[in-house]
Image: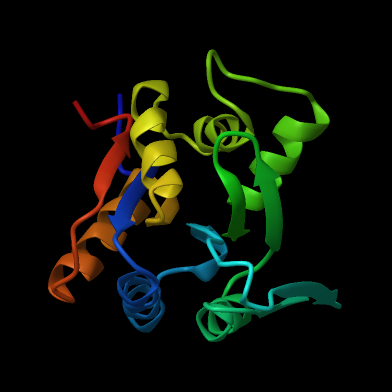
Length: 177
């Protein structure tokens, strides 16, 4: 029997870093477990912008056009990485999705026609038939905010974002048709 403790994922696509940040803050203030939240965004910048990254202990520092946004995000998330992915370009990832992507890289895992981002998304429970739309959104400069864990946790994330007046995420999991 399927239930609230089955795996679940809620993925919301936001057009810019402002809405993505508002979603993360709404989830944080709503008591959502930040260990179960990931964010993905492109690192588009012109060559005129100074961009830099470095790790200090468990924190990643970012400069450039969206440096203030990413700096605030790194203080909330557990785990951060910068990847250059063929076809997507430079992306920044925060949260448990980092481990799934690194696992795909280490194991040379490719899921069908997907690259490492797609393999990471599948690894946290996003269905293969939804991965292309999420990779396309990132490629177009949009941001993904991903709540993963149990179906109940994914539902809770959806409720928090709905009550905050933010775009509602798509739910994926055992009970989703």
